[in-house]
Length: 414
Image 1 (cartoon, rainbow, N blue to C red):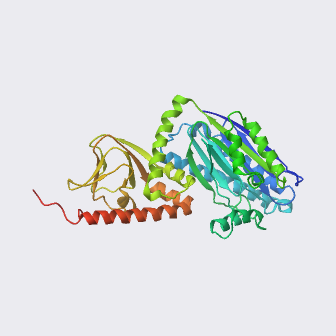
Image 2 (tube, one colour; image 1 turned 120 degrees about the horizontal axis):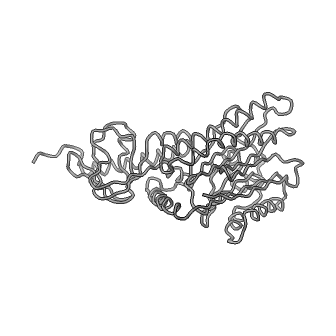
């Protein structure tokens, strides 16, 4: 895999120094933007230190991480925990630097938005109101959510997005790296496609340059990354240049023979997860978080997926093929493609009542309970959405089974 990038930062037209810092390391696949805050030069110190700490954390690890199994949910969870640890390490070092120099740096902090691109995966870590976008095909997807007072008000319906831009507390952050010794980072792991372009920017860009402008620039066939990056900064200054402005563009290029099979598998996962009724209404970022948890099982006819009487810590979604649920050898229900099964045993911890068996060559997605619990810990908002949907889906399935009356008694001997 090859990555090319462009990084541009500018002081703007109203500030006398630049408190933004950025890193574009194509060799290690590490990209980051930090927007510092604090008196005197404290913001610049905080943003620079945060970037340095993240780079020093990941550079020794990248070679080993590139050997990981991109389809293994456990490996993806490890990547998420490493990103959390890297941002926590940066936070503690910025905080300690402020403690050690109370005269000019007390309370300093910074936003921090980080991208690590491995061979087939991207890891995103985020604190503050800098932003990251993914341009895939003809769409620009937001990968981060602003940790700001006004964005929380927008999410609650108390402010419109237009009102938020002009609000007197528009620059107040609810999370930052450094003001406290600890911080909670948003972390996600994404599958990478050929031609993906990641855009990371400080709020000096996101508040001044429309997303459509960025998408149009990245969609031009003849556009260079350097040209688009400079055009974005020029647009920020043309809009007033009220703040420091920084943008990184990183484009993924890869061997077609290697990438095509990987992308075909991911397309299957994305399609099935997107079409699950219990996940209806989830946004792109939330759906990608769910896809990231999914393992895959290739099954032959007769393979037992769930054995009756055994405890299972995962549930399943049928991608293609035929799976039959049986009770004491009697057929209870055939699972249609796109449907899920095994969730009752996954969540209540009791031995399985029904046995699930592949009837034909089949492909099944698997979701481990431990991975779902970890996702709920890292993203409680998404966790609540998923648990509500699971509860609704379980209720519907219980109603269906009870109507059939198949679990009320064992079949009579013949």
